[in-house]
Length: 472
Image (tube, rainbow, N blue to C red):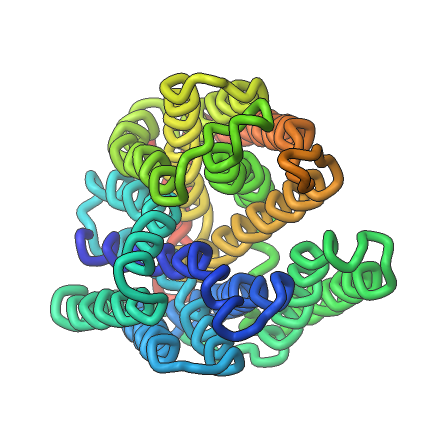
């Protein structure tokens, strides 16, 4: 469990480590801000495309094998980034780093297969929280290394961490005996990748291109058309990339929808709080601290998710994961409302951030448990990968909304335009609304579970026959 959680932290680090490096990379390579932002976008796209593919392959041929391949790609990408001197090579490096995003759902599925029954909830809760931990510590860590040495040193550090985790996985983590077999659906993989790339490109670039521009609307429309065709293909093929019959079960479907909303509710604070901390005090909402201090202030938020993961596991064991999800979503709602008030005291702001980390920990620990208790044991990796993908869509949507509002509402400070408080407030209220909607979906999940007798149906495949065990 320690090794797999270390893998989760390392992978989540890859998504944020380049953020504090963008100004220096832009200056050294003569890039515009829009061009440099592709170092973030390409990582997100690669992760979204590779996660469901890795999940399906893990279910088919072995989760440990695919996990090792993903870590190998991340190691290669980190090393390429450390040695790259051109923007093109750096883009390829970031793409390879993003391809390892499937490590998180694969790790959760391995824990489900290998841990004793009484430790599964705690293990999956801790593993799920590593996304927030890595995201919170990645910014200050990369900033410190870059400030003391160079941005190349950040990629060398990532190479070392990736290589260590790859060796530990090969030495410590056993191969899961649970396999689904079947044939890989290459057509389905291409269709899903095409739809996701179109959707996420439209979401991430819409604020720059214009939400009503031809490229943005064309990508949104293309994503819908391809998704409809992909769904029809998945319903016909014998071994689909994503089993839509399983994914449309009420509990699984509602949980996945809640995942997207929770992603919106969580990411607003991850995105806006560092900006608020660094903004000049003349703005009326900023604290005027350095990038490093702002990063240090984010660390408690990430560690809070890790600390409260065992608490969420105990809550799920006693009352059910659906109650944990509901509780977490309501706490996130309160935290986002608190953030929308733009606290002027740093201690108060840190307390509000901690409440958001607690709510996020409860939600993200409950969702894999709900998913895995309602899908066949041979499909846990692909089901968790789909859930992780929807989380990415949620965070990307929040980033697009926040970026649009911050650019739309500005004030003049020191002779230059900066984001006004209006953009922050509107984004936090949207995050609060998303959290409240996630709570409503959790209520719906609770109704479905209680109609099933207050129990969760765990479906397992035995010799081709489906056996349903009712687990208290």
